[in-house]
Length: 141
Image 1 (cartoon, rainbow, N blue to C red):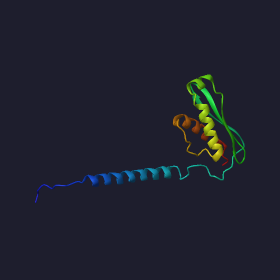
Image 2 (cartoon, one colour):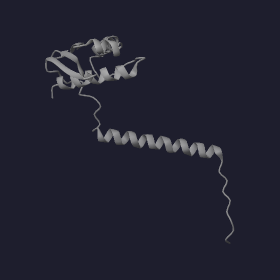
Image 3 (cartoon, one colour):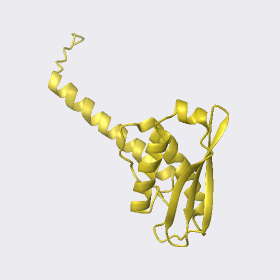
Image 4 (cartoon, rainbow, N blue to C red):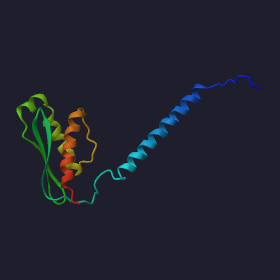
């Protein structure tokens, strides 16, 4: 009665179980993120802005680069960079064109909670975070 037992594991079954485990893990992580964030991914669409110009600062080579967002009560009016030093233009030549593209998309959709299309994800992410930070200050609670 104490004989050895032989288990046969089929490759197809192992792959299927691996995929099911991976999907379950992704769903659990997504649920945790949703619960931790309170289920709120962006400010309420009906929220209004406090009119004014709001600024977010990016430090590059210890030189500030300001991203400014101007809003009226109901819409985003403009997005632009100020204090662009020569060192920024030299080491980050893509900042100005990427900011123009990002500003165009944000103004078109009237929200910073977009997924910008770009061939330069790092540069765009830096600018996108600055724009979102400035707009978060503008939302009326």
